[in-house]
Length: 344
Image 1 (spheres, one colour):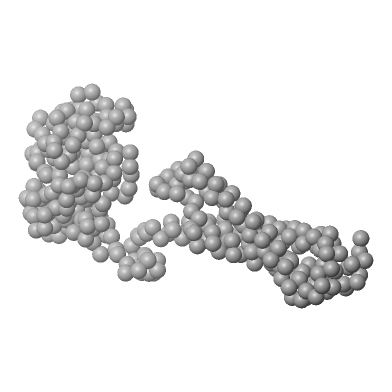
Image 2 (cartoon, rainbow, N blue to C red):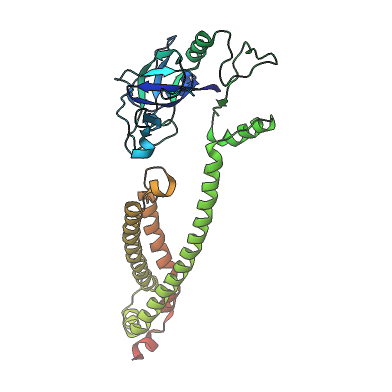
C-alpha cells in the first residue's frame, strides 16, 4: 500500500500562472509512471523533485490577459524541465489579486515529464508527483508550527503532529483478488474504487453482446448446414445414374460415401474462406472508421481476429460441411445399382 498526500500549489512562469495538483507518493508508485522525458527523482533526495503530468499546462493562463488554454484552445508556452518555474504553497494566490505581500516563492526542479503529447491523456496526465517524505519535510519547513492547508487541526486550531493522507493506493498480488481486497476495505467503513468494477461491467456487456451475436451465428450456421445438405441432395439426384455406374464397376460403398463427404467439406471450406475475408474486411473498417479511442477513450483496435481463431473457424466450417453432407452421402451409398442405372 502507498499513501498519497495532496497539496494545491500555484505555479508561475513569466506571465503564465496556474494551479498545480501536487501529489506526494511513494517510490513504488512513481516507478509505475510512464515517463516521456527525464527520470525519476533521486533516491533519498530531501529537495522536492517533480514528475510533471503531460497535460498540467492546460491549467495555466496569461495573468496579463486573463486567458489560457480553455479560452484560446492553445497550450501556454511552458517547458517545465527547461524553464524557470516558481511555486507558491498557497493555491489561492494570484498575481492579479489585491494581496500586498505575496507568499514566499520556491524554485522546484522538474526531473521528468509523463509520456504523451498535450493531446494524449492517461491517469497521470493532470497532476505533478513528488516523493511523499520529501513533500512532508518541505511542508514542515514552510509552515513550521502553523496549520498546513488541507490538514485537520485540534479544537484549539493547532495542527496535529502527524499527517492525514487524502487517499491510499492498495496493490493486490493478483487481479483475481482485487474485488476481495476492495470488499475488505469497504467492510472497514472506507470508500474504495478499482478498475475491476469497470472491467466487470465491460465483461458483462461483452458477454451479453457475444450471446446475441452467438445466437445470430447459430441460426446462420443452421441455415447454412441446411443449404449444404440440400445442395448435396440435389447433387445426388442429378448424379443418380453416375452413382449406379460407379457401383456396377465395383467401387466400394465407403469410397462413394467419402467422395460426397469430401465434396461437402470443400463447400464448407470455401464458405469459411469467404466468411474470413468478409470478417477481416469488416474488422478493418470498424477499426479504421470508429476506432478504439472513440468507443472506450483508450487508443487501440476494438476488433481483433487472431490467427488461431481464423484457423479454428476454417476447421469448424469444414466439419459442419461434412456433417451436413453425411446423410446425403449415406443415401448415395445405399442406392440400388440397377435402379440408379435405369434412372433418367
